[in-house]
Image (cartoon, rainbow, N blue to C red; front, side, top):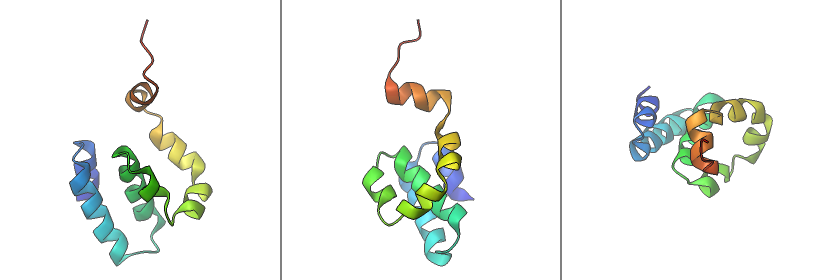
Length: 83
């Protein structure tokens, strides 16, 4: 999937565009919706990620937490010095 490739190279604009197209074609596919939510969050578009997706997010909290628990993401978000 191109969206995941774009996301890995931090081209969030293109990743979001691709994931939106996929979700538009298959709106009931939760995995695709979660991918879009994840990349919107990676791009700091939290309000848009949450809008209309609260139930899906709530039902998938453990999955989303694991997806977000990379060392790089944690250190970037909380800015803890490594001493």
